[in-house]
Image (tube, rainbow, N blue to C red; front, side, top):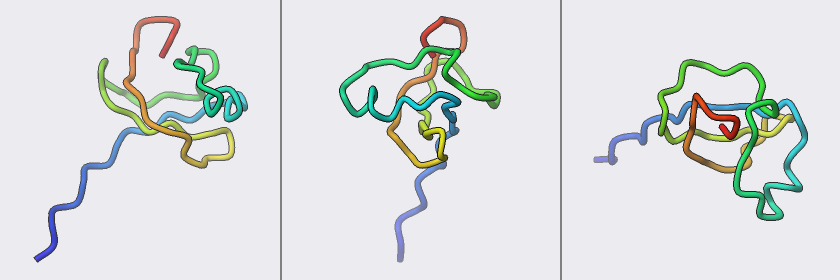
Length: 68
């Protein structure tokens, strides 16, 4: 018997190329760097995709502040 599948994380896609900055240790992403956003609850864990749609990492989402 296989374990249940992990729930899929909501995805946020960058419209700016921040791969180097994020891999260099930048701890946050400003809202203007994100593309169109689906409806995501504050505090939700999200999968961050690069401009090329490749996964860059995960983070917690803030729908109200300048730092998403």
